[in-house]
Length: 222
Ligand code: PMT
Image (tube, rainbow, N blue to C red; front, side):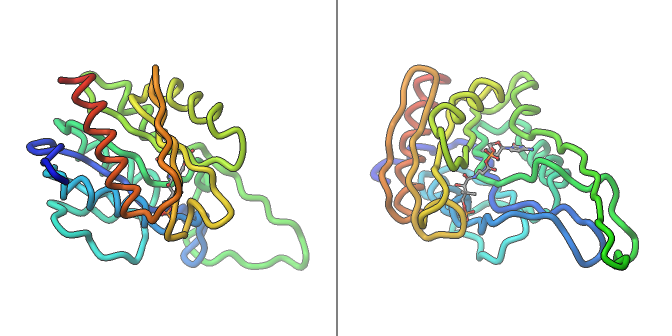
């Protein structure tokens, strides 16, 4: 960065998947590798921010310059860690793919098969981390991600409004983009604008994303 566009700011970034345990050996998860969120956290640190990175279960090294990393497993743990880290923070960037549901209960012992009978799992909805942050005043400038396979702009703008966000970074997943991949492409939306960031590697994309977040943050929060 030519200038430290986030100099003196406290930024919290979430990254990676969450795992919701079914029993001691099985879980419900998703395909997030954490690469996008780790790139965003690294770019924010290079832009001068004091960064807390809340990471789901991933196998990635902590990017250079990160002030604090908190490793979590479940959506409930991520919710607690983000809520704590976001106290007094200036910006929260939710890059994590948080599980929307968890098993109603986690079995103490490994579940056994029952002669061809179907197995039904009851799922309970997880709290929405972004929506719960936006309900607290004052709260950080909130940036969400939206991973969509279709109707990207419509679903992203719905989430922007419903979750009370300042900005949302929408990515179409599939075809070598989004989850697990080295590259991504993003369109950023805010109430009265948008910016397209074409396909490139996640490190380069994260730098552009941070430039845009810093400029919107300055416009809205001064
Ligand atoms: O990790 P990679 O392999 O690099 O892949 C990157 C990515 C595709 C995971 C990332 O770019 C991305 O899009 N992350 C968000 C994925 C997602 O879960 O989107 P969503 O549409 O389900 O959620 C929307 C937003 O709400 C996200 O900011 C999410 O963090 C947040 N959320 C969701 C559920 C929940 N209970 N609490 C939340 O805060």
